[in-house]
Length: 199
Image: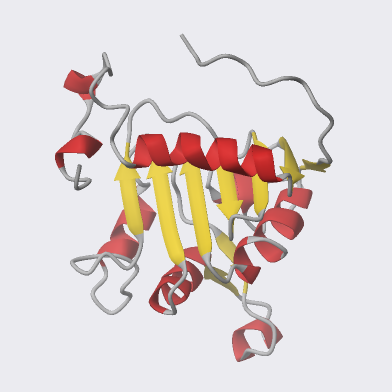
């Protein structure tokens, strides 16, 4: 059973649909992060984005992996946490293993934790911007895709402090492993979070 429901109240929200996910969540959200990016997704794949403004790659109309930028942000001190249910796609797993592209690894530049029960799609940026919706962290969900190849997605963005607090607490409860003890799918979990999350 979940905790008692908080009283209903009015909250300022912005609806995002389809290509809005790229402009609002990626361009105006993740790429502007200064402190933290927390991502929860069922499926985890490489996400391609337009190359940064001012680069030769951008002038040539090229795309880059968002994971390269997340790795750079993490090295600069941004806390990047990714909760996911399924294993990363083969392409992303190979990219993350590549020695010259230090997206993750022994020094855990990017922090990834897997929980088979994660189905929420949540992105919290700097503790100030929250996305909740249908989009997984995949190219078809959030990346720079043409309209004919993009998933049909819908979600909301808010800066509401109470929603941010509640959803970041939910994320952190899973991330910390505090939900593992009562989990009835523990036997199916490849590596329960509470066995390595420092609890």
